[in-house]
Length: 455
Ligand SMILES: [Zn+2]
Image: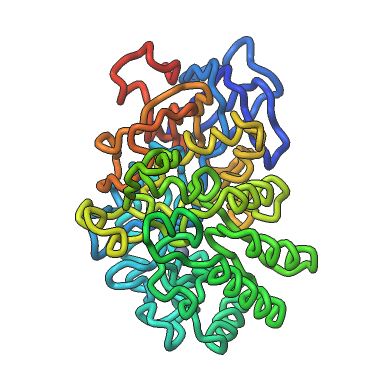
């Protein structure tokens, strides 16, 4: 339906970049937005196919600045095809692919290969290039070549750029290209075999805990170097109160620093490690763990969670990014110490984030802003808004639809979520990429009554 004229009618249109929050119709043609009407039309212009969005929220497609696609190299965990299908189901129309693939995306050729293979995918893929050759942290990757090939930033995510001098050079080179460095913030010498957050849960489970300082110290260094170079720094997956403070001060001082937070750091704490959906086992009851909660940075305390929620609300943290990190069952069916880091996030992100709205911690329009306009600002691309002539990337939301997370039904090839069996309120009803329907919940539920999505 790419070339067709389509109108999405009767929905509550939330487009934070344009300050729109009203009942309206969205007209599209040839994959581009034509108009968001001032109010719902009483009569549709001729030649338009009508999609009924009554009762739904219509917003720009979500943008994920932090996705691990595992392709090339670990296609049993995720491929470009499966990962972008998962994105579409989660309402994401643009995802930024981290370069910790095999081989790493550290040459123009590997980047162009990913772009070529994602051309007909269910979401737009924007690659992130490696900072260093092979992500080994020793010498800089050919950053100009990577930028030329289409990279939107640089990261060795999964591993930090530990060497101070190299990080400074990386910022200078990336700064010259107008692109951010996204440095996995972890001071490795402070981690020393730790596998979860330091605190009472780690003590009770007999697991090695890591202090928040391992993250905050690296953020402090990166902010220092961003100040020195004037270059762009994007801090990924903030989880700790002190990290938020460093970013807040950098912003107050006018540095070009942005930050993101994941759905799990916004909604879960380290008590989830017990595998009881956040409940703490009774004293005397045997405590066990769920390896699906192992993630880096780790799930933190309630105080840290509230610090990142507040920072997201106040704009100190700009963006929600999923850090979608699919892993095979074998990588999680083991001791906590041996489990791979990462949570499968794309398909549950919106549903779990809606709990913040239901708890009165953030408004729905602001949540949408942090998933659309805010990441688009970091990308500096014409995305994340329903402006005339921009790509018709739209997500239709049913904020009140309840559903139970069943990883067996994921489009992702991996199932590693601590949310299995959790009831969520808030669901993505449909997703359009360049005006084309890439997800429609009705087709998957096979029950037209289950959701008032497209007709
Ligand atoms: Zn990371």
